[in-house]
Length: 367
Image (cartoon, rainbow, N blue to C red; front, side):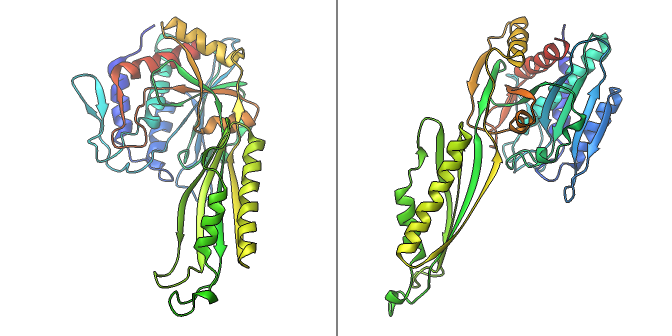
């Protein structure tokens, strides 16, 4: 079964031209809902208070006894994403003009789903219910999918097309991500006349960070201090310093343990100098692992073999909406879908990979 490659590329380019940075997805939401309705799909928006657009649920009702399948993607792009235009090169690459991202993350997924569904409709291919869960604000730690109403989802398994790399790649494991913020509070004083009267918040922070390993702290977990801000002037003992960072781990309990350890170390160093700290952490998503012998993986491998693709199964250090779906009891994997150098103005895709992505979506949908 073939797809309409020219239409696929046209759809992709149309969607690239729609501004849809995180929290500003209304135009993309309207575009998608119009297409889903044209495909005679049942379609609803799930409004989120304070958001410009809500999440989308759409379903193409099946006419067989095949079990329902869910496919996930997101509407938003990172910045700079205003005024994007797709440029098709002679070698088949598609790029932006390198002043913005391309937005293949995650437009390549959405275009693949649309083309697969159009092909199914045009050829009256047998299928079960095909459910689409399309989120807003995925890029900032999967915020939008936290508001998804899962009561409408009937599928037990899901495919989230949201992974860089060649088509045929899939991630079965993803980490917990915890962000943290430490506010070290000391006391200001003149650094020349009476530094002894101050409590040096920056020195306290440095002592604490020296005691805490960074990078790969074990075979499952990474810790990173990402930003530090503070001080009022070069001749003033710093009164306050704020440090932010994140923890990623394939073991959720280990991630929690490291957050607690960071809190403890900063508190100990502050106590030594009669200072104080405020510590806040936030669990964005929780780790999961899908086994290779599960149905969702077997279906993926079968579809790859049908397309003469070699399935490659990995763990990813990145999170996605799939973390939330697995927590809700939906067994899902994250699938590569023709996007490369994501989150940069060098982002690109190729026509050949887009075609493979759409064909993979099609073969998964019709089983």
